[in-house]
Image (cartoon, rainbow, N blue to C red; front, side):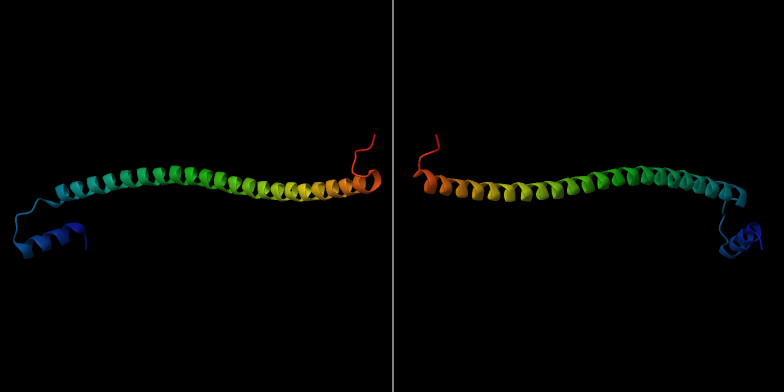
Length: 105
């Protein structure tokens, strides 16, 4: 079966006055080509969107890593501050005991 015979049979059953198959096929082909062009444009747009989304995701991952690093540095500084405070307290106590509370000459 071909499209022409199917078209003729459908015309005979409906009894409607329909345009010949060649003009209908031309219209259908024009619509198919239009849909193909639109699909291609959508695919290109999606590729650009995917590239941009990938860049944004990479930037967010980098920012997350930087904040994690800043947290670790903050913890190290906090512990260094605790250690410095403890050393200062021990030194002050040593000065108090050895020199009676006055700084050494």
